[in-house]
Image (tube, rainbow, N blue to C red; front, top):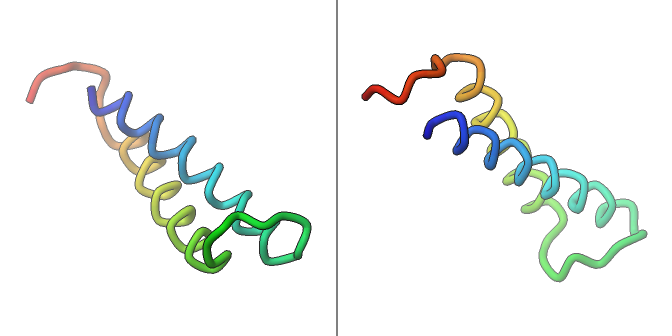
Length: 61
């Protein structure tokens, strides 16, 4: 379960990061502040990577 959450956070963070970078350079209008997207993207991306690196593959709590 933790691996799935880590994967979702990583993918979501990468998408937000790409949208934020494209919004900063003016080729895309995301509908919200591009800096907010970049900050949230970085946080979610590194949180997901951290979960994927440090948790084992078992479903035990």
